[in-house]
Image (cartoon, rainbow over the protein chains, first blue to last red):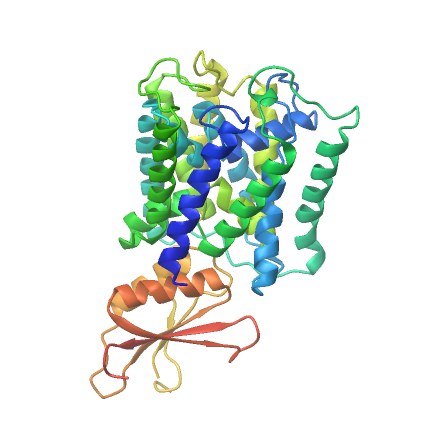
Amino acid sequence: MNQRRVVLISGAVVGALSVALAVAGNPANMGICVACFIRDIAGGLGLHRAEVVQYLRPEIPGFILGSMLAAVATGEFRARGGSSPVLRFVLGFFVIIGALVFLGCPLRMILRLAGGDLNAVFGIVGFAAGIWVGAILLRRGFTLGRSSRVSIGNALVLPILSAFLLILVIAMPAFIFASSKGPGSAHAPVLWALVAGLVVGALAQRSRLCLAGGIRDLILIRDPHLFSGFAAIFVVSLALNLISGRFKLGFEGQPVAHTDWMWNFLSMATVGLGAALLGGCPLRQCILAGEGDTDGVMAFLGMLVGAAFAHNWGIASSAAGPTANGKTATIVALVVMAVIGYMGIDASRRPNQKRTAKEA
Amino acid sequence: MAYRVDARGLSCPQPVVMTKRALEATIPEESGLSEVLEVLVDNHTAMENVSRFARHRGFDVQVEVGEEGDDCCIVRIYAKGLR
């Protein structure tokens, strides 16, 4: 099957499963949201104590394990790492802060638009603007450095942790938190969520589906390949929302969203820039982590810790709007990313051409 | 023998950006040698992306695996019709 078809089918399935999960119990327009679910997991583990957003979402371990299974089956699983792990942790940390000020990762941004939430339009414009800045840095030679082979144990840590999370969500020992109200209490049955997560993880691994990559490739090399997956998610989830009567057009009263356009724009610009520097959106980081890429694992851990801080420090927005701390954190995030971006430009780097045999 | 870009260990989109810059700096030779560029990558995603990019730009592409170690994929890019 050709790559184009794989990415279109993956996008369509992700769109369909997102609506299906919302119907099965996940919060509205949040069938899948990588940032929100990592935030819920941070809460479920007790890393933050925001009572309404605590639940060990099985979708996230599903993405990681689904990606791992697909990568193992096709011989693509390789333990690698060493490309600025600490900077990737920092970028992951600030990416999720941006996402939680907006109230959604890039995938949920699309799902929100497909549910009629027009606030997402400002998010998309900001996201594209952030990626555009990232693309300029990439064109100038921005790099986080090369990765190389690492021992297999490094690559197994996150999949094992994922399996452990699944055990915890089923066993529900007393030290695990679970919301009794709010978005954290709205969830699809564990098995459904896990199966959907595995399917999305495997398909995203095969198709390299990436929300940030879609826009980045359009800007950088005018290639609509990944963007077509992005479009397929939107079209399918929009159609299913319309059919099932879940589509509600407007700005006001949208589920788990606020109407502050400026901070919707700036927070998603943060996510766009961070994702461009990391080489992928939050979903893609989970997929890479499953494939054995320990740099993706570092970004994932950065997101997990960032989500905990976002709630402990009152950074995350609510339906009432962004907080003063959230605005400050977004500005800090943009500054940190700009510094990382600027310092990562390898000015000496030529197109890396070397004359070989013939020249000699 | 053509130019070579070593994009091993780099994550997307850097291999494609490097290929783009290299292709823009290289003119297909007229001496009958048709290979324009070889790009070394070490993961499937980069291999697919570089190949797709070169095909989009109207080049022929051939991929070889394992010539320089298990991890290394060589994407050879040829001027169309000259191979």
